[in-house]
Image (cartoon, rainbow, N blue to C red; front, side, top):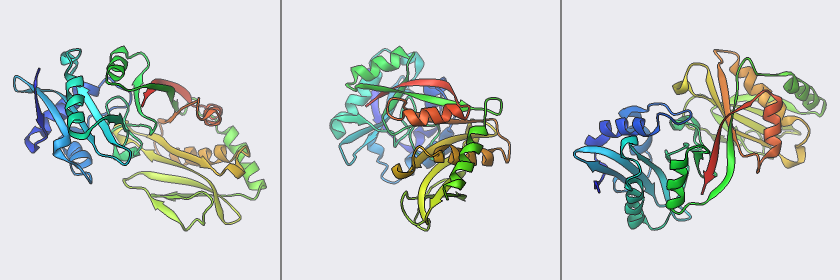
Length: 306
């Protein structure tokens, strides 16, 4: 087996090359490079070099795994093995080495994990979700590895995309008219996110660049919001939907469609080529229906593992 070593600064260039080799065929992955990996991973609060492990063979990095402690147990943030070195037990050995340091691991999407990403939007290199690691449903090797590592498969998640050719704003326009008739006020803010049921002055900051939020107000309180972000790393005019939430008291009134229309219109104010969103139909059938009404179509399917 290769030598297992901990992170050191001089490994950054080789790690960047390994990261690209591991994930360059995955959906929405871009090449972060050494500078970005350092800024977003190594310089992140709580980073511990001892929990970022590499497998080295004949002087070359062939795999890596990253983990750390968490509120509910040790977490596996990321794992990757060079395609030429797969099916040789390297991934399992790296995860086992982390488990010896930290204890039993569970997948967590707060870090740059192997098959999908995480839920911090533009703070990471690609999209993600909080439900668990997602492996493409036709990637038998990835799913075999996750099963052998002791993780359990959950529901499927869909990545949906809307483009100028598929976009249908008419449902959103109708929803906006209904929202106004119900006494709802619609607005837009940048870099911040409100809190459902609270005064609009109570805001949560969104770290990073390119965030914008559409907000629906009723009787001076936040009835719903939707958050999007630009993803120029994936190409010009590319966006992602980060969150959509409507107060249970105000659901089934078209507020979600009105909020999404606000975001899509804002995207169209500049170069707009595509917007993507991740949803789990089993858990959010209403969201799936909403996105499809606006013209979103499936572009990738993932099996969630947790």
